[in-house]
Length: 515
Image (cartoon, rainbow, N blue to C red; front, side):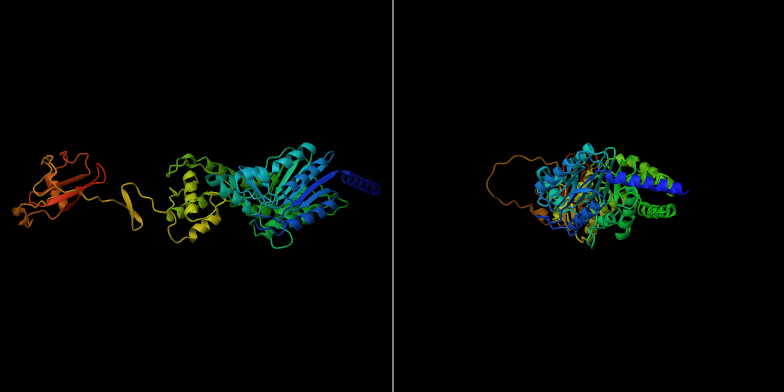
């Protein structure tokens, strides 16, 4: 037994020395002092503390704070230049980031993003850094605390007009090559919180859990997720996307720091906390992530059942139907912020405010986006995206009066808040003239007054029907063809009283009145 203990100790020491002999290179950037939007409170502290953490774990660190575009590019070039022969590369970023058309960009402190053209010249594509890492190093870790609410994205969306829907909230999913782990501060498409302490909730948890002796980084990220869930009341769920083919241990074990029983209890607590946050969700990706992390977990069967329910809902015929407003009712890819109930609520409010969202069916299509765009235009608002959200719904509910103007058809006019048919005055014939009386052209003899015959002036019309519509039906029987194709008829009843009738279009009922 003593011999086995000695052999085991030597093996642990050998493993530790091999791990410490690895070449590890890290790039850490923290951008807080933005020049064209409000500064951020935490990224500077986050970056400084992360540099100290990684250096203690044996990383050669390239770092930068409040870098402009040229500064970011210099730091990235310096980092890439040191990757030759590296066993592990790590990139950490805290600051503003944004997604456009599914691509992620990091925002230097001098970015303005007043137009879409500026995106190519003022922001740094995330793929530029990730591609360089994967080309040079077999194991890569990316930690992104860049999902904050971003006013630069609002500026860009404002300049893009109807194309602003391509500017999404937070960051988009990132495809990875073999051997790469990417961790986001929150799930794709969501916004992370800055927090009220020295560090953001995500970075605070990273500093606490990264580098636990003998612990795989994917297990450490579970602890990070649990802490962030607790710190934000379940509003922020850290997300990771991994194609690692083996364990990545940032700090080798030197003994039995964690017994199997304690480790199992910690994993179970993390699983319970994660399931509690997603159990009522309608986003398939959340359940796929659960099964990836816990393939034999307590709720694995329930997660598979939820995925089947979501797939059936997406495959229903109504998802491919044409919306009543004429736009294709193409559902956006489900995520944590866009579900059918939320979309339906937004449609109801848009219709209430006169913005004509069409059918209130929860199918968020082109017509619904056009209605939301109309609301933003007439409400003098700037929206980063034309997708439904809880913030948009709250703003709509706060409106007490109609926002979008009333739009009436050509033969209608707005009156008392609704469209009514325009009633045109008919030109009446002279007394004694009927519909059948032919009109002969007369030479113009100047202005003269025509007075009705004396016998008609003396009539009291006592024998006339009480209603001009009755007089019309008496004189023009249905199917007689007298009014075919016309919209105005004027005549004099046999009782001597003149009347006029009008209708909006052929086939519509006549509306008659005495003169």
